[in-house]
Amino acid sequence: PHCCGSCAASPVNARGVALGPMAEEEEVIAAAPAAADAEEAGAPAAADDEKEIPKPDMNVKRPDENEFNEKVEAVQLRMEAQHKRIQEIKETLDARESTRTASSSESGQARQRLQELRTQSRGLSAERNAIYSEINEMEDARKLRSNQIADLKKRTQYATVEEIDRAIKEKEHFQETHALSLTQVKKIMQEVKELQGAKPYVKELHDVTEALKRDKEASNVLYAKLKEKTAEVNAVREIERKQQEEVERIRKKEGERSSDVPGLIKERDECKKAVAACREEIKKLRNEFNEAKKAYAEAQRLMKRYQAQERRKEWLKREAERDARRKEREAEEAKRVPWEDEMGICDILVTYLGRYVQPKPTEAANGAGAENGGMSVPSG
Image (cartoon, rainbow, N blue to C red; front, side, top):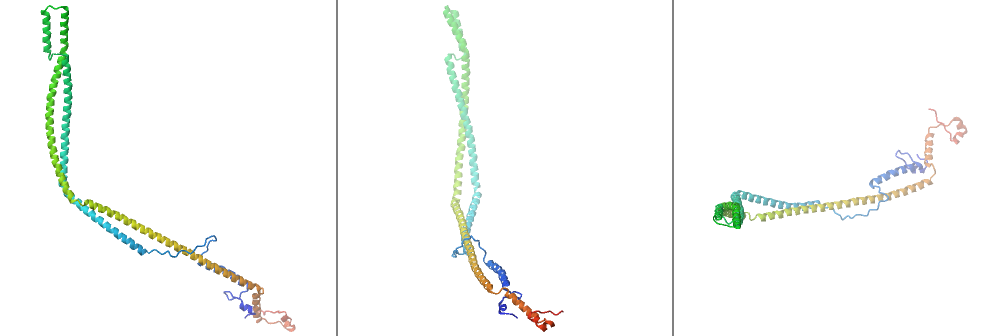
């Protein structure tokens, strides 16, 4: 039961108890933070000094990963084809190398024989050069001895000691058999003395002449050896020349079998360059795809921030509306009688308790108790 219409209009709490103006105000104030928290859960708080985010461009599309994979696969197929061709060329070159190795025994033997002949020719040439050196030394010695002989011949006209002895005897005999003046005797004695002094020169002349003869004989021997050695060198060089022609013939034959090797090597190098270009193309495609993903992710991040900003604006708008309604209610509550709801509750309580209260006899006679609103509660 209600004592008045205002009690019926009063709100009730969760326990079904009517609320007065103060209680209603406290309930509304307590419920407001909860509602705000609920709103803030959907709209994150923004810093006061954060700049407003403009609406991002929504034309940024998500990069198509399937299209990217198709492009990469196409490039990889081209690269695999180049790898396959490189492997084919490698197998061809290996086969040519095996054939060349198998057929190069003849060429190897020919080159080995040519190397042996060259070594032999160099050895014979060195021996011949040594003979040339000996001959040159011998010629130098012969020139020196010839100069000595010419110098000794200028010093004396005699060729042997016996000729000097005969000349001395002739002068002594002339001195003994002729009457000579003192001047002539001294002159003959001086000539004898000069002849005696010329004996060492004659002896030296004899020795040098004999040495010159021996040098001539040795020189003849050296020239004979030189002629023989030259014949050997010429013979070996002729064999070497023929062996060189044989090596060239075998090399030309091998060159005809491997004439396409340079072309294969050039094609292999071009394939390697193509593989490198494919790798660079894949790298470029991957970089472009990653940049597109990054741009899309950045656009999505900005859109989320923009949406959060808009949600917060909406929440602030609703919060302002709630504040306005709350202030309106508070103004209406301020116009009501203070403690009106509580007084109504007390009236309800008095009425309810009056059902169980009996009036006292003295108070019933004079009616004072009823007028004073007195009442008593029966014991028990």
